[in-house]
Length: 308
Image (cartoon, rainbow, N blue to C red):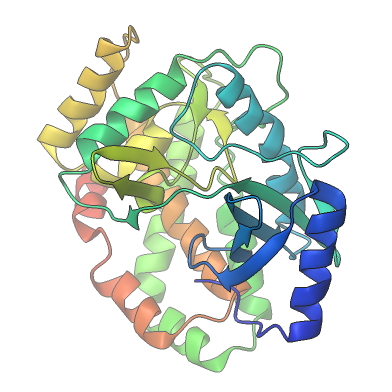
């Protein structure tokens, strides 16, 4: 899901002028870039011969989350993580800025194809394990609290929504939603107050995996938090080979950690509710929601439903 707002030439010219003024970059072309879920994204080509990725986040709910991510991204880059998008600073050395009421970030452009397959999981896990070796000392980062409060937020938004088509689909799947919200609260109680093994996590690395020949990158670090590795591992948690590969990648990087079933279950249910909330935040096609309920990682939920 990308920004559905059609921008006119006046807006684009203002944005390019702003980039020239604040970043001392001379734009020669700017085109929409279909990367990310929230926010407005652009590819910008410059007279200096370098290409850039621009992301603007407008919703008030997501602006502080996005803004908090910049020091963490910079921290990872400073500690040798070279497979993520490097931040381009303003002429005054700022990591991000404000444009038209949005938080604006400028990054190096990374060429490649955004893909996610079983085969991409091995390099994805290897890169995540390298990120986990970077200490969070010296940075201010949000920390997982296993509150499960996203379920309450979702039901509040559901009750307040007037999107008839989405509401109809949600009502059709009410039993599934309520069951998973109840399971989320259960595992929130089980996991709460245990911060052992917390590392810097991405939250959706598989969906932001870029392949360019033999090189791989993980982009869109909009919501990194200190959390257990299960926050990144849960998507493939139902596959024995994937759990083994994830743990092997950590061990190869000196991290001795065994994935915990209760944490995997928590994130299965937490992210299920998170994406439902996202469907209420943005205009989503009915086909996308139908597919989400009927096909999207149902195997992982069958695995999670067996965990006590």
